[in-house]
Image (cartoon, rainbow, N blue to C red):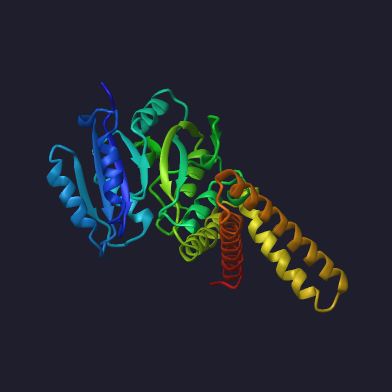
Length: 332
């Protein structure tokens, strides 16, 4: 007997992508009679609900339900969806992801084999639009210089890790560690995995579990995304400071270094040299990566596009991290 799997999907204004993830779930190798899908919709204002309703009419045997998420935040969506599930295993996906056909089957097998209390896989970062900038952002979001050692974006080796995207876990884990933290508007998945690890559990990354994930299409959307990441990372670290990883610390340290060196350079010549060295080395690293991408893909637009995307990620994350820390220190 295979366990019943409940796929939960937080959703808000995803009319362009929600059908793709549903079609991917319809094609899963895991038996459909042992699956259900629960979408927690944050009261979408576009045609998301219409798209879902049309899919339900076209596939009436597909076990799909929609529940309201009036709080319209991701952790509340996850908790609301989970409360409506009937399965033994919870598997999270996002509305702008496309799991491979064996995604559910491999996730369940990892849990049954005891590899971890939360089992997840690798993102294949895809451009959300057919533009040079969207393609550049996708490349930057999958490059180690852009995301550090976040292995779920590029590794091909199975390993125990600190976090995985989405993930699959037994529903009983909530009785042990509690629900998703609704005080965090972002980083709720990382914080959830911290509690699993603190309870003695393991987070297991299997690169054979794969999903395509669509990156933000424009720099403005990318900046907003990474600003949220950086801002709420500080709030999460306030609870678990020992979980800070070097990939998370480098952007705020770099931004702070530029700010301090820039300020000191007004009075001290040596600070100008430090600032100059920082800027030159950073620019050279970005341009080398951009050149490599341009040559590999034969698109000269990547020479500038990839560095711009990485700069946006680094400065948004680092600036938001510092701003959030400053607000906490001031009591805000």
